[in-house]
Length: 170
Image 1 (cartoon, helix red, strand yellow):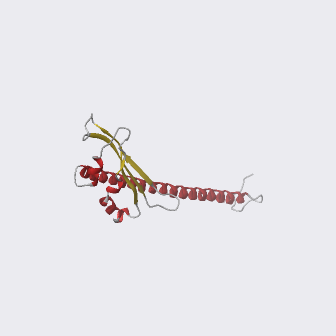
Image 2 (cartoon, one colour; image 1 turned 90 degrees about the horizontal axis):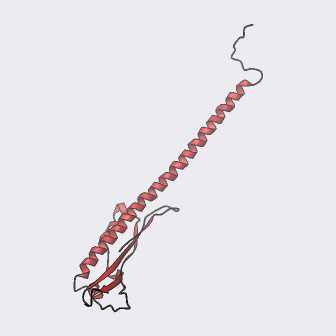
């Protein structure tokens, strides 16, 4: 006996299985597509925060370099308050700690913050502190010391993630 091929479905429902398999495959592809889009958006947000953090790091470095340049200039200019503060006598039990943050301004870095590329960034707490001063030998006018520069920058961000960088240099 020869079997005759026909396009009619069989009586036991063989063609329904094909429809179920197609629907299941479409559902799997839909789930994979949604998962990929959510994964991609989270990676994009993470990359954005990292880039803003790098810019914040550069701004903090800029603030510190500007404070260092001002400190070098004012420490050697007799008419400035920093010059006078650094020339005060330091006696043995005292470490010679000084907070010079009020005397140092960072106008160039602050001017950068008003430009279009750095909108939303904020430099907070630029500090200049003399941590330690000691006389060299027994002379009162020659000393060595350690100066600590600190700058904190907050980058603009969304509701959930913001980049923050704090840089300290001694």
